[in-house]
Length: 139
Image 1 (cartoon, one colour):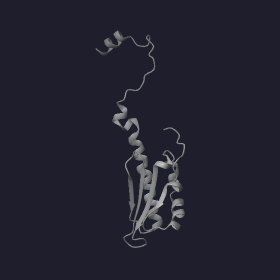
Image 2: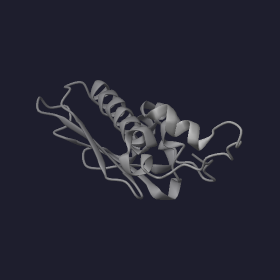
Image 3: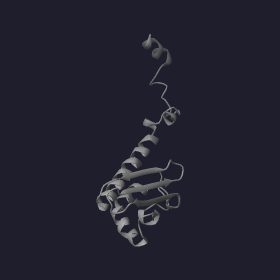
Image 4: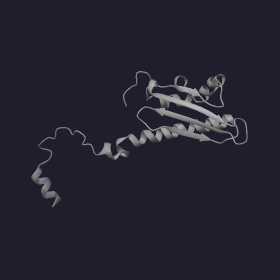
């Protein structure tokens, strides 16, 4: 992967949605800071994160973290942990895992379309392989 001129960071890409106030944003960004290394491979202007919570501090609380990266499918992670701090850590760790899985799927060894593209071969030395001999060895 080539270097990105303006790498994405949580601080730059994070929005707080329902259930959170702008005052919570810095605290949440600190919790998600470990995602910076994983997001650095993407352009900041093409990456968005949104965290929201339904029924905050209640028994049925549900935290949702959504990630949009241009050219990729939206990634959604959720947690029903009752402790808000634990729920935020849960969605953060799940997003990191899903980003790693998505990256792995795009690598040639795991992507049939990329694997089937012929890779350029170096010039073969005519002394290294004699076509007639190669045919004789396979018979």
